[in-house]
Length: 250
Image (cartoon, rainbow, N blue to C red; front, side):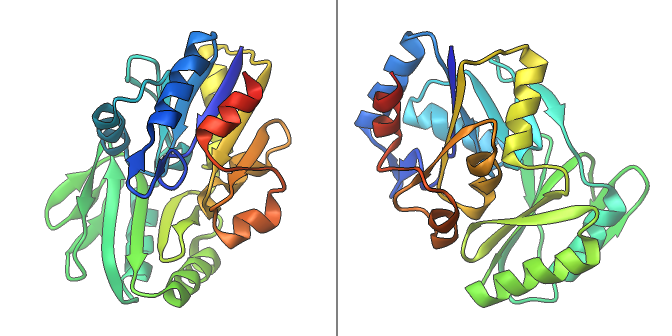
């Protein structure tokens, strides 16, 4: 049995659509006894709803860059959370910049944070404008320019690097998770939880937040040919599509 762990935006879904070629290839992959799943920076309900709309079949979902893992029935079996006071410190840092959007992922969904939102933390939860948020798994920010995104990522690394790490799925957005969370660790947790012993683990993606799973020595990682420059500089194996990668390994 082989496993394919696939990013969604820019990888399976390119230009806003999932091609019929990709859909057919996934069906062939699973029919051959292999596992296929998504490893996305999106929050859980977002990626699940998109896949249901696409009509794509899958065996597992890993959301929030590895912070949330489901089983084959869609039930959450693993979750890695940011401590409330660290989440508040991160939000305080983020809101120093000119922003297009800030969101907090928790449970299976998310909450939008406004620049003037009142935020405070207690030992058990984060509070945003009076809304109690437990189990924060990711805080995401989209900035107005790439230079600010890099500056924010670097500033947060200096202030919170021991606890929180930022990854860039695009040149103007950052996903912040616990420092020990990444897509590679999410895949490893999935295998441990489900007792999977795979012949080979293929990974494919296009963003900075995919690098952990693309560069992992225990996986066989492929960058999309349309990937971010930093990804193409660091990942030697490339593919033009998910379908092309599947055909190579069937």
